[in-house]
Structure formats: structure tokens, C-alpha cells
Length: 434
Image (cartoon, rainbow, N blue to C red; front, side, top):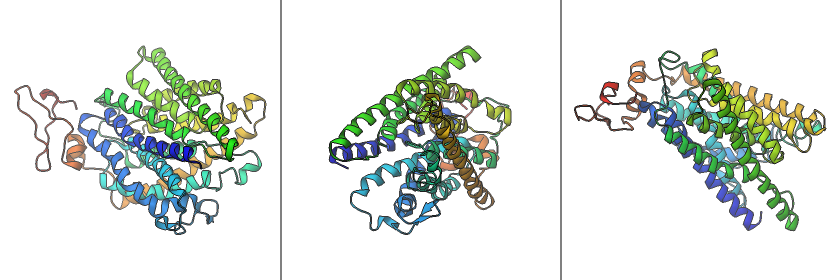
């Protein structure tokens, strides 16, 4: 890694770290006013927990040399980063931000109703048993890597996290939503986003940070002048593909809304942005710009359709983690098999790459589902997931944090009181958004 590449990787790490506060804004705006602080705290809580865990054993489990059955590496080999080379710290800085954002994504599926303390414990255990092993399997030389057993058919492709990040988080969100159950009034009363400008700001920050996510994932395979040429050419392509896929997905989402509902919404635009970013993540180094546009359009339409399935099937994925991240991750991961310049079915290269992409997607789905079911189920039986029903009705911000996001003023001019020693009154008749 030369100095220029090292500087870019550290810059990318900072961009990806910014994505988690951006996600907090994105999710926070989508919740009701009485839940926004808790929603944002779930992302910030992950920022507190995951880096500590990653330094202690996460890097070792993900990228250590002592492989355990192709599933993970020995967590004690590099425990506490003991014995890592100085040059590895740059990679550690970059990779820890991926672990953070992946875990934070799950929180949107269980908004308004989960105990904050249980969530923090879940974050530490889940990232250990689900994220680190899958990162090792895909990027650390394990079962799903280019050196794994499926490479005999075709080398699996996941440039920046279709399986490790988005399928993983999307499946986890679905399992937790089923384990914890629906919110009070789900499907019976409106649960509208309370602040769409916050959501759009969060989407913009996610798009900005995603250039670190995708473009920063370049892995040098040569040295000297050859490396420089590869770096410039590949990272430029990845930047363009990331942009046009995201734009096309936003167009696809808005078009479906217009045809189905008669209105193209700001929430649809923000959600379409994220759907496109998710879909292009695994494919950004393998497609042409035109192929990326096609992938983005498909992802925007399918994800816009998928977010409504929770009402049909009765699972309460509060902020559409399943519809956007699971479906978008599947579209991107499997779409490589159709659209990859080298190996894609639509380029006349047969179905080998498509078969491998489908296999790694299914393995990621199954692995994440089993781990999340075990971890989430154990926490349900021990610590418990649900807050008290009365607290849920009043608002999780007060019960879990003793705070409110807004200082509401009644028609008479009196103000509601917030803080650890007082509960906050939030009544629609007093001008509050509930």
C-alpha cells in the first residue's frame, strides 16, 4: 500500500464512519416524535460497543491467519491487536467502520419497542457470531471467498458487502422483528415519519459516505505502475457505477410510487437512494455504467414493492430494513451473475457466475437467520426485548432515556417537561406530533 492509497483508505474510513450518524438521522426522521431519540441512540450505541469488540477479537476473527473450518479465524490469535503489523492498522480502521454500520442497520426493524440495554448486548454478541464470521468467509479467505470451494465453479464476487453487510443485516432485522413482535397499533393506526427533512439529510449523508464504502474497498493486486493504473481505473469506475445506480434506483422508486399511488414522495426519494446504494455495493467493481443503471432501476422498483409486504404478511419491519437491505442486497448480489462484464449471463458467459452468486446469497441468508434466531431468542428469554406496554404508548424516549427530542408548547403557552424526574406529556391537542 503506497502513501496515496493509504491516505485514501483512511479518508474512506472516515467517510464510512460518518454513515452511522447519517443512518441515525435517516432512521430518526422516519420514526414518530416520541421515539426519535431512542432510534438515534441505537445507532450511537453501536458506535460505543462495536469498535471495542472489534479491537479485542473482531479483527482476529475476521482476518486472522488461523482459519477454523472456513467459517472464522481464531479470535485469540490477534486478541487486542497484539502482534499486528503496523501497516494493518489502516485496514483495521477501514474494516471496523463496516462492522459498525452493518450492526446499526438492524435497529430500524425494531424501532419504538426494544429495550436499549438488550440492544447493546445484542450488538456485541451478534457482531461476534454473525458479522465477523461472514466477513471472514467472504473477505478473509473462508468458505465464500475467491479461494473457497465455490471458486471451482466461478470466483464469488462481493466487492463491498452485499452478503456481509446488507443481506446479513436485512435477515437479522426480519428475524428480530418476528421475535419481538409488532408495535402497539401496527396496521391499525398511522405511524408516519415525524421529520422527513431529517430523513432526507440522512440519505444525503449516507450517499456521501458510501463513496468511502465502495470506492475505498479497492484491493491492490499489483505494485508500481501497474498498481497505479489499476487503482485509478477501477476506483473511477466504482465511483461512477455507485452514482448512476443510486440515481436510477431513485427514479425507479419514484416512478413506481407515481404509477401506484399518484404521488412521488420525499420518503420514496430517500428510500430509493438507499436501495440503489445497497444494490450496487457488491457489484460496483464488476459492472459497466450502463449495467449499473439497469441494476439500480430494478432495485428501486423491487425494493419499493417489497416494503409493502410487511402489511401483507404481518411482520413489523418498522423502517423497512427487510424491504431495502435484504431485497436490495439480494438484487445486487445475484444481479452480478446477469450483468458482470466478466462472467455475466447477459454477456454470453453462461450461468456459472449466476449459480455461484445465488449460492453465496443463500448461504448468507441461512447463516444470518440461524445466528440471529439463537442470539435474539436467548436474549428474549433472559434480558427481555420489549419495553412496558404503557411506556411504549407514551413513548420510548421517556422510558428508556428520560428525555424528549422536542420541547412541546401547548395552546395555552405552557411547556411540557422532560428529564429523568418527569414524564413528558405528548398530546395531539397540545400541538405535539405523536
